[in-house]
Image 1 (cartoon, helix red, strand yellow):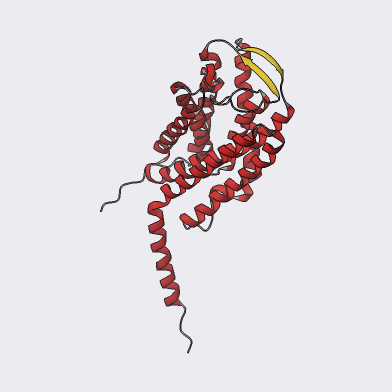
Image 2: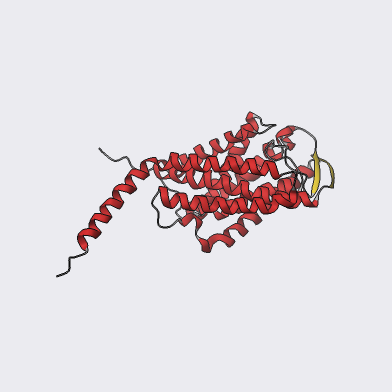
Length: 296
């Protein structure tokens, strides 16, 4: 008689369960450190190719694709996940498109308010090739920051602390990373956390997909630098965009040297969007409470 396959299957299931538990203990530092190193490499390459816009576009897009592949493979290997639902292929183009439209609309609305209150001092033509190069650069930046801060930090912390705590912590850390930029300020970093960090996290909470916040992040940054030619988050080492926009006036209106992301206008626009996204998420049952502590 042939031996039953059930004993071997049971043993394999037990071994897989033990492996899952072991890897689960260290999954956050392994994923975070690995992807952080990848992000630094991406930023370094972007900086090198920035003066060459025709190379920046294909290299930036290639780095963005590589970032997605890297996150998917690491998630499957380190977390022993058969699937990565936050990168579901069927949600890709719809999520990217919706996010891009929202990001473009929000930044244009902010600039319109700044213009109405006299914060725009000058507007001229910039560089079309710089515009193309910035598309690639901002694609790679958006992907790497989203997989790191929303895909790893927010997602894993939310499992342990719930949505609210995870949103606050991940947003503050997201803002803190922008302190390394050339014209960074403490208020600018806090503003980035309150606006970009919270808004992007709420976009992930609503959809439970990385595609929507990636599209939103990309369009916000690309409209910022690629279209209007304004320094992003205190960083002035990016090529000229399609336009060159000169801002003047009080920092509360223009954001000062950090850029309009540190302005009161950006704070109001992004926080209003965050509230709307979180309200929709709450109605859809996507806000997760803090898990109950297990008795030892």
